[in-house]
Image 1 (cartoon, one colour):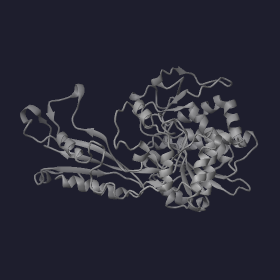
Image 2: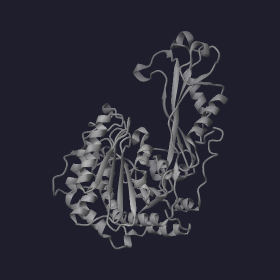
Image 3: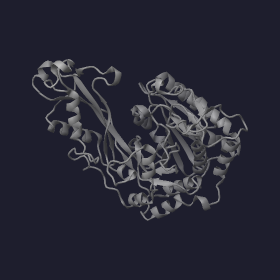
Image 4: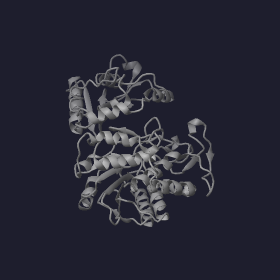
Amino acid sequence: MRRVRPALLATVLLAATAGAGHAQPDGLAMARAFREGHGARILADFARLLAIPNVAADSAAIARNAAFIADRLRDRGVTVEVLTLPGAAPLVYGELQIPGATRTLGLYAHFDGQPVDSARWTHGPWEPTLYTAAMDAGGRVRPLPESGDPIDAEWRLYARSAGDDKAPIAALLAVLEALETARAAPTSNLVFFLDGEEEAGSPHLGAYLDLRKDRLADIDAWLFLDGPLHQSGRPQIAFGARGVTGMQVTIYGALRSLHSGHYGGWAPVPGQMLAELLATMKDSAGTVLVDGFYDSAEPVGAAEREALARLPAWDRELMEELGLLRTEGAPATLAERLLLPSLTVRGLASGNVGARTRNVIPSTATAALGVRLVKGNEPDAMLDRLEAHIRRQGYHIVRDEPDLSTRLLYSRIAMVEREHGYRAVRTPMEGPVVSDLVEAAGRAAMGDLVLLPTLGGSLPLYLFTDRFDAAVLVVPIANHDNNQHAPDENLRVGNLWYGVDLYGAILTMP
């Protein structure tokens, strides 16, 4: 990949705000015209894709998704293979070679989804349901539109993976058909790399990359089509994503649950012990107190600082939206906090509450801890620091349930179950390909584009940066309030339209 002097960043930043004054490129015009004339069919096709169950652990359902997407890509002239490896979910690999093209773009998205608790959904997770607005804004159920019906950008389509991450696939398919209808073609060679197990941590993605490594070496830029727009609603491009790891910690009391009347005030209480342990890890301002937790974080450079200074000041509005009166790390902004590693209590369990509360001292208490990583953090090293902290609080760490002899040797025992993790990536914000991509996205965004140094969520970008000398950018389209990973996940229709426009501009950039 070509490298240039940092001064090019000024050009990149100007490109993000230049869209409104430029002549509309043909690809963008074609994409807009197509979705304005065929919006009902695009939504119907999207709903058909959403109706296929796609929990990552359901191999048969994932295979059905892969076959459906592969067929639709073939319909658009893409050469497609459904790649398989032993024990892995299938991956949809496609190529569209353009005669005379001098640039190759790699397009990554995923079609698997998070597990669901159907009882917590208003409708079935795989029963795509269209609303006139967001449910919490008073939206009402309405049928999918018929051909020629007016379509409101504020409509919401509810289903698992509507926002994460089938929307980019639906938008790509629409753009390819738009260009075909207009007898036009992309200006770059395209490589499609559509993952079927991202929500399971993409354990085989590296092997799949190696399987086609010789055909991926000439890619100039990888575009990760995942994630949400800025919380202000403005379109954004991110130049990295946080890594992720975590652990589950179980604290032990007596061998069995004890009557709180007979033993309360005498027997140790695992829930209280766990609460005390967690309180030593983080102070009330949100600073992590684990020794060395921030030491390996790579400092941000001048380009990132300039981009941070240009971000919209939106924290106050976001706090109001979320009902928050304070935030961790204040007065640092959300974007600034995303450039530091974080420690989160993702879940707590010990006994029952509400109507199921019992007068007992539970025998165990468990916390699920999540660690989001930034560039410079190594997953195992960060978990090592957490374990060292637990030991300093007087705990003996075990990997399996402690037996009686172990319990009688140590007064404080913690079973630690470490999770698989991967590193963060933050790529340079300057370069010729980057400038072209930002300019194209700026046109689709009508000059209202946000450039974010790193996305808050995690993506396996490191698998690509470790193997290829190519720019890696996150190019999201979903609304920030899409209930990602949660019940009633949804996509705002206007965000799907933005995706069609965005890909139309990018696929036909000079």
